[in-house]
Image 1 (spheres, rainbow, N blue to C red):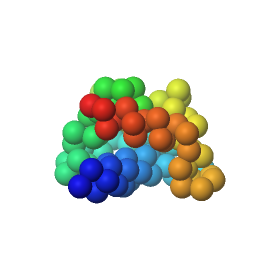
Image 2: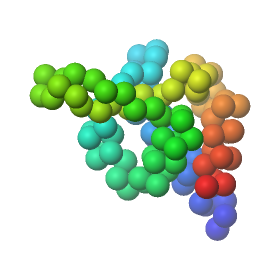
Image 3: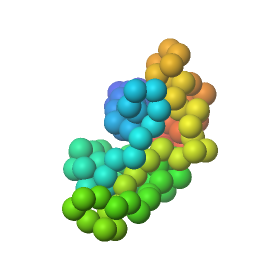
Length: 102
């Protein structure tokens, strides 16, 4: 049971991080789109914001002057190793442990 929960958190965490990965770097995504995409795991998404893994920026879009966008924090840029190496990295495991503790 506990292992299933950990696997579910791991899978959703990877999906969230992958959402911000494009090409070979992390990009900004509009908050409205990100929240809509992760409404099924909003607790995990907001935990990542609270932990500072995902940060909020104000951006100007063609629809709004002050829209909100999310991006992976510079402090957690080493998460890119998930995509460049072998599906996991120390940073990912540390975040997973912090999120499970919440």
